[in-house]
Image (cartoon, rainbow, N blue to C red):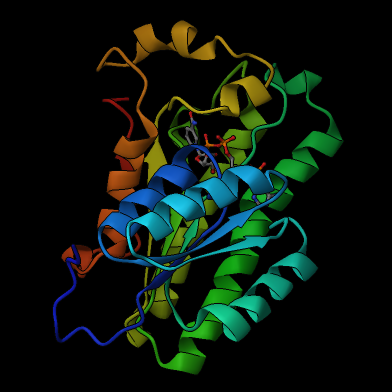
Amino acid sequence: MNDRHPDDRRPNTLLITGAGRGIGAATALAAARLGHDIVLNYARDEQAARAVAESIRAMGRRAAVIQADVGRSEDVRRMFAAIDAEAGPLLGLVNNAGITGPIGPFMDTTEATIERVFRVNVLGAMQCAREALTHFRRHGTRGVIVNVSSVAARTGSPGEYVHYAASKAALEAFTLGLAREAAAEGIRVCGVAPGSTLTDIHAAAGEPDRPARVAPRIPLGRLAEPAEIAAAIVWLASPAASYVTGTTLACAGGL
Ligand code: NAP
């Protein structure tokens, strides 16, 4: 199934960073179901990314897998060069790759953790957006960028990861500013701010049981499934959201 209008001659491929697992993998599958070809980026887990790519190919869509640490500018440039050479023009970029660092109070968070989190979540997204804009301009594409923020940008995540919350607030300001800069070219820049979602990110932060701890404070009483966040991301990337730009959509169960 393809939800694109037959007159829509824009490219069809979405680049999704961190697409091997969690929200990124769910977004890749949801977008492929809507008829998109996908470039899946991952950092370390090649096997996971290749498994998602296989599922996409089984749906009859094209899937390419590219390793790149978005926190490294040279990797991001290499990734876009590979896309130009092998995957054809992009319709959009989903800046999904993100990390929290270890859970804990701000005063226990090391400078190295803060630097790494900002490097991946903020500089990485900015660098990918910059390359995507260059790419859209070169191909004359009215492309779309969706930045994956977090409810943390509004709650501040006290006692858990204040530095991460600050990085996502920066990403939301970037989303707004870049959207207003790029709007005259017909390029949209949006965000999705998920609430706590059932992925590996909580174990990676050092608290695998975090979902059970935080569920009671979520008005809907449960964490999100990755597919529920993916649905918001693919909607923002679709022509159905053609008049939405500069907005970060909360998808956080009422928080
Ligand atoms: P996850 O399950 O931990 O998966 C993270 C994905 O990002 C993996 O595919 C990982 O690649 C990739 N990644 C990590 N660092 C990377 C880097 N430097 N360069 C490229 N890829 C990198 O995470 P998730 O929970 O799905 O989170 C996805 C996004 O949603 C993040 O931006 C996160 O901040 C945001 N978010 C998540 C939640 C939640 O509760 N889960 C809530 C709000 C917002 P490898 O597999 O190769 O390691």
